[in-house]
Each structure stands twice: as structure tokens, then as C-alpha cells.
Length: 186
Image: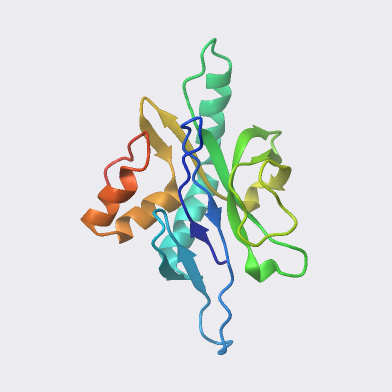
């Protein structure tokens, strides 16, 4: 799984946290593939078998019921407040499964088996998925989720993992791009 996260602030000022993957071609098949991750335009290389990143994605999948309960209850209110509320999932073109991209999905729905919504981040190289396209996928394909409550990001497991890898200056620059705050690092 190769991925890159980059930040976009749409005109509506809702933060969209797109995550794109691009395969790095390597001559040595035994060498681990590299993940390209960025939140601020700066790319840092992460092995595809990076235990921390894989743990962050597993934690997001495990905690998905928390996300779904919170946004389901919020949508019943006269004025929903959890905004943005998005998930990130892995997509790939047929025959190129090892060149997957992780994309943020908005307008999330869940029927107990399948997550669906609209692609909210511009794919880097995918031909089968486009910005704004309606998509559906199983929970196993989920790689992260995020909602904002009272100005504070909830979830964002992969983003938090990347923030831990940043030095203080990079983290400050990253965080200044968002109209909400991230929790203190643990």
C-alpha cells in the first residue's frame, strides 16, 4: 500500500484531507515498497510495511463504529455540528492493486456492511475513480476517518501518525493549514 496525504482547503473552507497513493518502482523486489506521505506538500518516505501506519489504519477500522454513531446522531439534529465528517479508503485500478491510492470520502453513508459516499480528494494516478464520484466499499477498505467537533479533530489516525513523525516546526506549519485543531500527540 503506497500512499500520500496532501491538504486542500476548498472554497467552502471545509478541510478536505486527501490521501493519494503512487507506487514507487523499485528494482529490488525484496526491498520494501515506499509510501509517500505528505500533509503540507513535503513528502516523507514510509515503508509500506510501516507498523505505525498500519496500526493507525487498523485502529481507524476498529473505531469506525464510534465515527458512525457520532455522525448518525449528529445528522438527526436540526443543526448538525460535526463538520467535516469524512472517511478515507483504499482504491486501485483493476490489475494495479499494488498501486493503490487512499482517498477521502464525503457524504458518508453506512448500511452495516458497505460504506458509501463521494470522492472528496483528487486522485493522483487512478483512472477508475474521479473527484465527486459516488463510491461504495467494505469496511476492510477503510483506512481512516475524521470529524470535527467544537473545533477539534476526532479520529484522523493516519494524520496523527504523520504528525508524530514531524518536527515541531513542520507540525506547526501543517496545523496552521486547517480551520480546526488536532489533539495533543500521545
